[in-house]
Image (cartoon, rainbow, N blue to C red):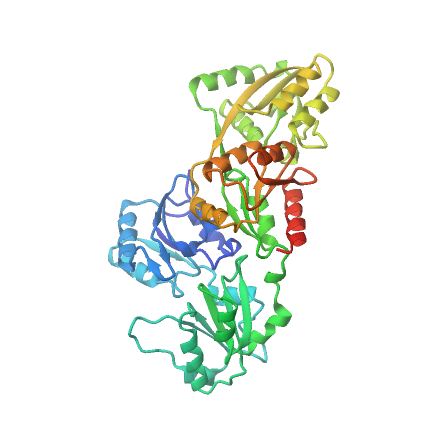
Length: 510
């Protein structure tokens, strides 16, 4: 694949937590990466965008414990940079705002290795915005001061509190939880009024965001009572009082919900986007993957079928993957859309139909209920007696479809385009399993019985403590058989599943 960006080391800011805040360029570079060096601040959703073939190096920087020193990280970047390819150093927030990106850039410069910085949205302003606190506001705050709350062991406090008090405006202390008492005392001793509004925002821009509004005098006490912990930002200034009018993120219907989406990689984006827009934390845990059949005998058998397309009256597709792979197979054999002339197309649902519509082909039949059995029964009514049916689908296709066709007296031929199997271990699996064991997952979505089986295999049979939201009855039966509490969306589809989650989340008062 031809790359859009030159091969070098990229210091990429992943933003403060909400994956939607990652820059367009940052995401584009990440998707071209050969090697990704990352830590905990990058975020699970962003890690899900790393290409499948890219090598991952976890340098493990987390609050209070570093598995790699900064010097070791610099050495890793220089080593990987010398090897060539696109190397992405993925960092939370902005790499040059308390991200030690300057040290990494300096090490690369000294080693003569080309690099480029891709700025990210800094938590200093984004977290305040998600808490409903404008960093500046006309007539209230005309300046913004961003500082780190950390200091080295034994180091004197370098903050000029008197200068901050004289300047007014909004003071933002990143990584300030452990030093909050010292910071507030410093401001008070420098003459700042005790009643000045102050706020702690924990895990800002994420579904776990938690905000405490108080005064400079009492904010540490109130934060402790509320259980505020790192990562959190301390903001001090009159602008904090604007939260009452400007808060929005924590009012979203799914704020606080934690949801695992098990759709295959590349198919989960739509559902994840809808859920995140409503405030949920989404972990993409692909439970299955689809692979085109590549064996010589398999491809030869498929070629023989495709060369006989004119013998069939109906071509039937049961998934978007099957439709996409069908067009890939045609293209590789230099067959164009003219070979479909006279053939009627049946699809199981809208997502599969979209694969045809974007190529200028409109399916002839789609059942009102998007299930394999309904597709088969509907075809028995639509197709003329004696019609020849070709099923183009996975090798492990649903028997409900073929049973319905047989019962209706229609002859069919089954052609396997791809296989479905349990997906490789995704980077978020360890965290997902930990959350599941702790009972901290609210919903898991399933779009097929195979995603249920794949999920159980990956998580070693964890089946309780959450609600399984299923696309249809067949999937729900598989979930219930595994011991899950399972519900079905009213209509099979991503939008209906999202609505089902919102309704249940609000009803439970979670």
